[in-house]
Amino acid sequence: MWFNPIWGVFFALVNFALFLICYRFFGKKGLYAWIGVATVIANIQVTKTIDMFGFVMTLGNTIYGTIYLTSDLLNEKYGQKEAKKAVWFGFFTLIMTTIMMQMALQFTPQEQDFAQKPLEAIFGLMPRLALGSLTAYFVSQFLDVRIYTFLKKIFHKPGQLWIRSNGSTGLSQLVDSAIFCTIAFAGLYTWDVWFDIFITTYLIKFIVSVASTPALYLARSFKVDTSD
Image (cartoon, rainbow, N blue to C red):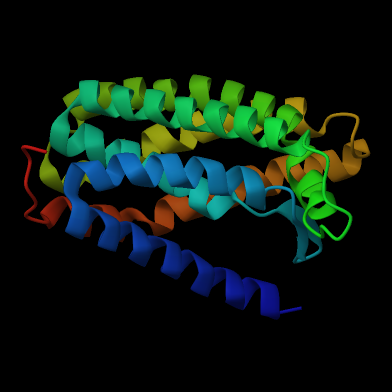
């Protein structure tokens, strides 16, 4: 019963640590790379469901939550324009991955091939998952950038970073979870399971957002090359 929650905390800490390492060593380019990689990994992990505290939830929420962390950091240090550009980059990355993997699945496998069925199990759902993710990603990420920019005008002091970050993320993730779960899972699961996935998806994303606040403050303090 306690393995998944304990492992989940460790899993989140590893995600935050890798995010900080990526930014510390690669600067702004690292943030773009993180959004691209995280977008793809999140859509692979979301195919796995787990039980936690009696609720059914999907994986992928932790690393997907770090995408908001990344766009908020870009907005904070480099401005709204860079944050929007990163959102477009993640959008293109997911489209590219979906097209390439769907084409790869069409090849006739060799008789002793062992990868086709596992790949079909993971990426066979990807068109629907990608549609849900692309729609949710597009709407919620641009909403997050706009809300963050708005809150930054009101709560502009350095110590108020947690307000503008969690405020923008909390609202945009609610929209994200509603759109994604409806497109990706409506009709695939019974409505009680669907609701479990929706509510846990949102709660986990929001918890990750709150938990990532120290990482955001730490990343903001990094002295990295701002010219890249």
